[in-house]
Image 1 (cartoon, helix red, strand yellow):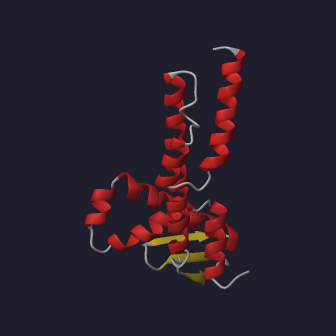
Image 2: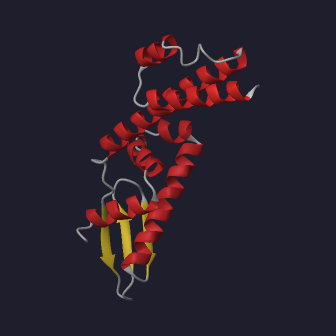
Length: 166
C-alpha cells in the first residue's frame, strides 16, 4: 500500500471513530453510505472498516446493556446479621444465601464474607443448571449478577452501607 493510501486509510479510520460514537443501526448505514468505508483503496480495507464498525457497535451495545443492568441491580442488597461473639470476634450471617463467616474484626469478617460470596457466585455460574433448578436458590441469580458486575470495592461499599456503617 502506498503512503497516500495509508494516509487516506488512517484519515478514514479517524473519521470513522469520531462518527461511530453512540451510533445505532441507522447511523451505521448512513456511515457506510457517506463513503467512509467505500472510499478505501482495497476490498481488504473495506472489510476491515466494516468489521470495525460492527465491533464498535457491539461494544457500545454491550456497554449500554451492562450500564442498564447495573442500574437495575442497585436495588439488590446483601442483607446480613452481625453477631459479636464472647471471644470478641465477629460473625456475619448472610440472610438470603446460606453463608456464615467469623473473623477477629469487622473488617476481616466483611472481607471473608465478600470472598465467600464471590466464591459461591463463581460456583453458581460454573454449574448454573444445577443451582438454578433448585427453587430455593433460583432467587440467588440477582446476587450472582451483582457480584459479576461489581468489583470488590463496590461490593464492600454496598455491604458496609447495608450494615449502617459509613
